[in-house]
Image 1 (tube, one colour):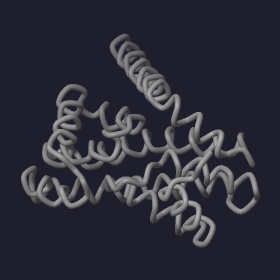
Image 2: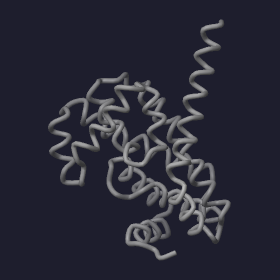
Image 3: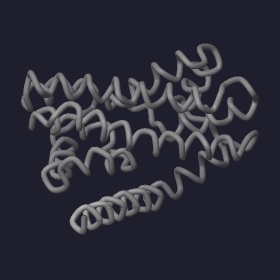
Image 4: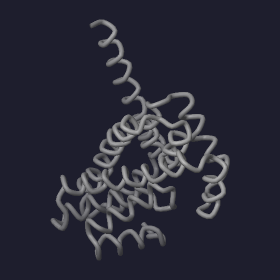
Length: 203
């Protein structure tokens, strides 16, 4: 597998900065910068395999970073609104079509979209914007962000850990089957919510 510049940046940052590097990279990823968690997290798993990082601390670190980045987007959107977010976002490659996609997800699925979007590239880092604009309850937002982030982060970190020295093959597998993986996660989340609602209705 030929390593691209983004992968090289992730490797260098993680090897030199450890947990702090992971924190910074995942915050930037959550702010819609082109640093995919599909690269950051499997390599973190590889570092766990080498004994350089701890599994629990890595999951906590990545999840805290996801929450911080999402809260920054939520807060900015809450106070400055759609048009200003779009103008600022254009400097990072954000387009109106990207925002419209995230907005349609949020309008259609509500709080569930915050969880499910964590598994969908292109929506994951933007779903906080319509949540902020809609002034979604911040504690519910944090809860949903935490749930989605824990599941996604743990899965990708564990894949990197299981592939070990062949983590690049794991990265290639994730890239190849990313859409199917995302659909599987979204289906599981929706199924769990439906089961929960049915049980609540029966009690």
